[in-house]
Image (cartoon, rainbow, N blue to C red; front, side, top):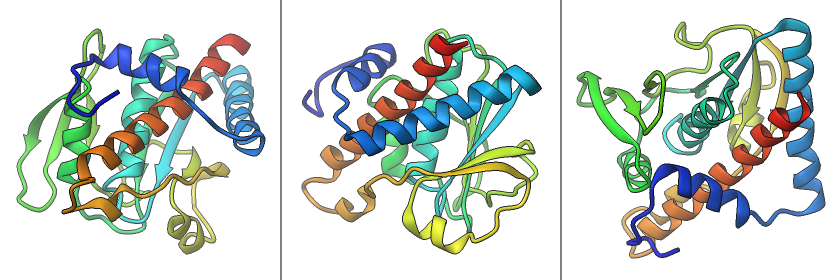
Length: 210
């Protein structure tokens, strides 16, 4: 898919799963996350997922958005998705742009030059996703939660994560390395699709197992 091709959110979500290429170890990790969520749903009836990356600006935000989308897509209303960092920065503009390119709409609900709060909507969405950069233990993030670290530095810098019932390390390549280059849009698209595909894999397995 080229970065200029028009595609809606559901199409992108399905394509991301169909195009997913992961090895056996990565597949097992995704299955482990899915089965842990299933177990929690069966015993506790609800699950909070907290995607954690150092700056909470790119990968963790993409993961939260797609996780929220997937929960709505598979009608898993008991699964809530959040994100946070070891420091707060901003929901980076290129992250916003790559999500807008696949059908998400962003409305500023709390203005800040440094770190605005967005209401993120999509077709057939029930409630908007609230997106802004924050610490992983911010009061907005419901507790207790399953922690999923999406970058190596977040995993290394968080030897202890409070309020977590389980922790998984699911790192993704950082599209930040392409900022201000001719590859910028393509690398953010690739990160967007990879994360959407792996989140789709997890939620499909949750849905099919329950």
